[in-house]
Amino acid sequence: MWSMFVDGPSSLLAQLATWLDGSYGLAVIVLALLVRLALLPMTLKTAEQNWWRQQQLLALKPKLARLNERHAGDPAAKAEAMQALYREHGVSGGLGSSLLVALVQAPLGAGIYAAIRQGVAGAGSFLWIPKLARPDVMLALVVGLLSFAALLLNPAMSEQARTLLHWLPVVVSFLVVWHLAAGLGLYWAGSSGVNLLQMALLRRRVRHRARR
Image 1 (tube, rainbow, N blue to C red):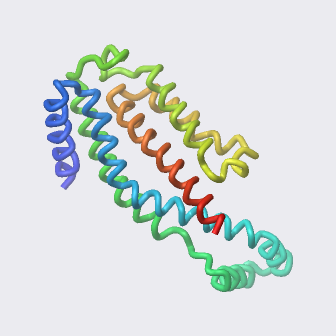
Image 2: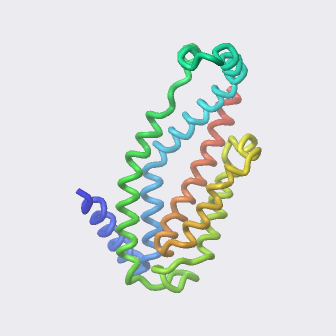
Image 3: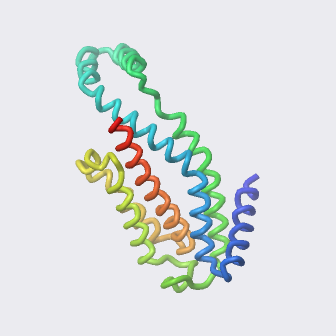
């Protein structure tokens, strides 16, 4: 079963590299774009649902605070009252669509990463990167900048900017890619590019819906 998730991407990468004049690095980027663009309708819909759920919870914050005070000594009653409040205002659990996206992306992403790791062992250079099997700090910087740009486009930026914790993914992206083989970093960069597009589309949808 696992070989299916690795052999398929490996064959596709090899074919893409053949079509792209033997450029394995460009093949990795194209694969990342193909995969993430194919998943974009699902991931964008999930992101939009999570955004509006967040806005509903923010609107209910005063009522939730009163519930906490009223049922401070009775956790069971507080949980029941919160669920009743959520049902009254149509606030969903928010886990279903996110879980589905994770179940689709996790095995697919793991298989692709394994395929790239195998392929870059004998791969050469790409752009400024001397060897795709080794980490590259400039590539890590590019991924960090893409993550930073996506964060700026996030419609929730005004709330997120209040804590440094929300900037952690940018730092983590830089540090992880800095220690990955550059071939894997290129996949991360291509995926981050589509994530940037997703945030731009989400921002547009949110503004359009807010004007209605």
